[in-house]
Amino acid sequence: MPLALLAGLGAGVFCGDAARLLGSRRRSLGRRRAFKVWSEQRRSSEALPAISADLATALAAGLRPVEALAQACRHRDDPLSSAAMVACERIVRGEDADASLRTLASRFKDGRVGGMCLALETEIRSGGSALEPILAVARGAAAEAAVGRTQRAARTAPLIQLVVALGLVPSVLLIAAAVALSGVGH
Image (tube, rainbow, N blue to C red):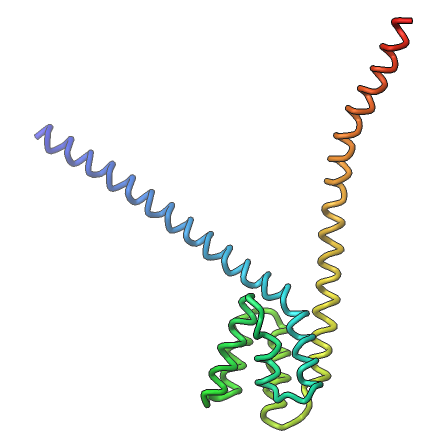
C-alpha cells in the first residue's frame, strides 16, 4: 500500500511538472509567435514608403498595375514584398485580381497597404489611374517614417548624452587630479 501511494504521488508530481513545462512551452511559443507577427508588421511598415514610391514610378512609366506592383517588389526581402509577389503571381495565373489584392490587404493591418491595394483594384477594374492615391500613400508613409526616426532619435539622445558624460567626467577628474598632484611636488 505505501509503495502504491508513493508511486501515485511520484506520478502526480511528474504529471504536474510535465503540465507546468507544457504550459510554459505554450506561453513561450505564444510570445515567439506574437513577436514574429509584430516584427513582420514592423518590417512591412518600414518597407512601405519605398515600395509605394517604386510602385508610383512604375505606374507613371506606363506599366499595368500588376506589372508595376511586381516591379516595385521584385528585389526586396520584406514580408510585404513577398506577399505582394505571391498576389501578382496569382493574378497572372488567372485568379481574381480583386480577391488576391483583398487577401494581400487583409494580411497586413496597416491601412496604407489597404489603400494601396484598393487603388490598384480600382485601376484594374475600371481603368482609372491609381497614380495619385499611390503617391498619397507614398508621401504619407514617408512622412510617418520620418516622424518615427525623429522619435527614435529623441529617445536615444539622452542615452548618448549619459554615456558621453560618464565617459568624460572621470577623464576630466583624472586630468584635474594629475594637474593638482603635479603642483604639489614643487
